[in-house]
Every structure is written in C-alpha cells, then in structure tokens.
Amino acid sequence: MLKRVFYRKCNETASDEALVQELLSQVDERTLEAYDGSSELPTGAKDASAVESLLLRYLVAEKKSIEQASARLEKQAAWRRGWGTVSEEDVMAELQLGKVKVQLPTTGSAGRPMIIVKGKLHRPGTPPLLMNQFIYYCLEAASHYCWHPANPDGKLVAVFDLAGLQIKNLDAAALRASFTMLEQHFPERVVEIWMLEAPTIFWGIWKLVSPFIDQTTRKRIHFVYGAAAREQLVKSLGTDILPVEYGGSAAETPVEQAVQQLAAWRKQMGLEQAQPQEELAQEGAASLRVSRSSPTLAQAQGSC
Image 1: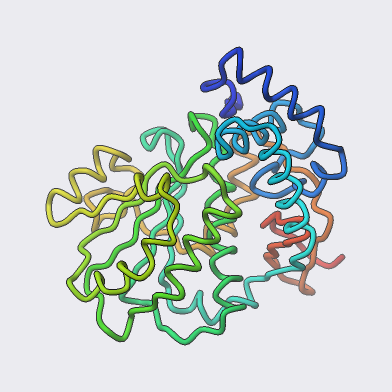
Image 2: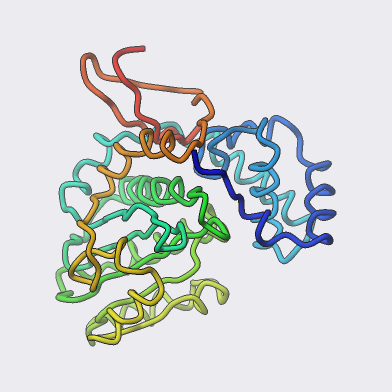
C-alpha cells in the first residue's frame, strides 16, 4: 500500500502551519462536512491531514488571508450543498461527443492527472445548465485523481487541444464558463494549462474571454505549437500519461471511463473514501453519480 502524501506535507512551512491551525479554529464542523466525499475532501472531515491540506489550498488561493479563506470555505460549502446531483446520464449528450479525456496520474507525471479538451469535437449551443453540469463533472473527476501519493501539491495539468478547430466549434461562452468554474470552485487545482495548436480563428474569442481570467491563472497558460509542444508536454508530464498523439505511450481515457475506474484506483492507492451522503443506483447495473450536495463520483453497485 502506498503511503499518502498530502499537499501540506511537501509545501507547508512553520508559519503556514500556524495559519492553518488558526483557520481551522474558525471553520465549524458543519462547513467541513459539506466537503465530505468530494474531490476536495475525499477521505472525509475526520481525516485531519486531508482537512489541513484543504485549508492550506484555500489559504494559498486567498494569499494567506485567514478572513478571506474562511469566507470562501463557507461560500464553497454552501455551493456544494446546494447543487443537487449530476449523473452520467445527465451529461450523456456531451459525453457522446468524446471531447474530454482524463488521463490517470502516474509516478512519471509526478502523480498529477491530466485533463484534455479537444476543441474540434465541441459543438456550441449547449444549454447553460447542461454546460455547467458537464464542466463540473469533468473537473470533479480529474480533481479526485489529484490525491495520488506522489502528487506534491494536489494539482493537475490541463490541455486544450485546438488542432483542427473550425468556426463551427468556437464557443466563447463555454470557454469562459470553464475558466469561471475552475477559478471559483476548484482553487489552486491547476498547475499548468497548455493551449495546443491555436489557429488564427481562435484568437478572436480568446480576446473576449481572457480579460475575465484571473491573472494568476493566466500566468499558468502556455500556447505551444508543433514538435515543440510535444517536447514540452513530455518534459512536463513524462510519456506514460500522455496519449500517443502527444508524444506519449498511453491510451486515451474518456472522462466517464476515469469515473468508472475511480473506486478501484482509490483502493489501489490505499485511500479510504468517505461514505457519500447520497448513492443512487440502477437496478442490476452500476450507476455513476456526481452528487453536488456531496460530490463523490463514487461507483454505486446494485440498488439502494
């Protein structure tokens, strides 16, 4: 069994420890329980090390301000309680396009998972609610895999593959919604964002969207092209997580397949998962649920 290594163990200083403890004293138990089973606190509020990792992420996101971090934790807890559920069936129309992959973390990738969005497979016109549900589904799935024992900071790598993008694929609203969801509800979760092969037609919507992206996030965005793009991805992540078309040796993993593999992966990693507040199943078949009142992405078997 691999030993768990949380973000705080590799990155926390003595002063950070004191800040974490002060923040913990201001956060009530009910707030932390709202995170139970989610990608932010998969092992539950009784896991002190995981809780400290959660608090440190919010402190970093709020530039070490106890007051701001506490307020954001409360706001995020309310958000997680209030969203209801998202199932694979709910976002099936988007899943069928095959536009999002979640590559499972490896030791070669420093324990970081990788989320890939293929722009040429996107189709605009998705209702806003469905689009937000799908973005949440994908980010929550990828974020669960950030708990690989080798991950030094609990972060993932995102890739927007813009090769072959056409006018019919352009969607400023969806792009902005993706960055909004990432920044507002998945703080300090992305270490790098690679934009591959951005064509000329992309720059128009980028000029519309980029002003709304937080400056910290913008500093993590890299536009790369050609052989240099593959070389940089291999250098950043290694070959065992990258699909073949990006210079690696791995097969692509559709996001829904990553969800299906999560329970087995967690067991393999020795990560005991908190019991979700809500497990929904279909008779005689596995049903994957993303509960936004307790967003767990756990696989439920049989009937409840």
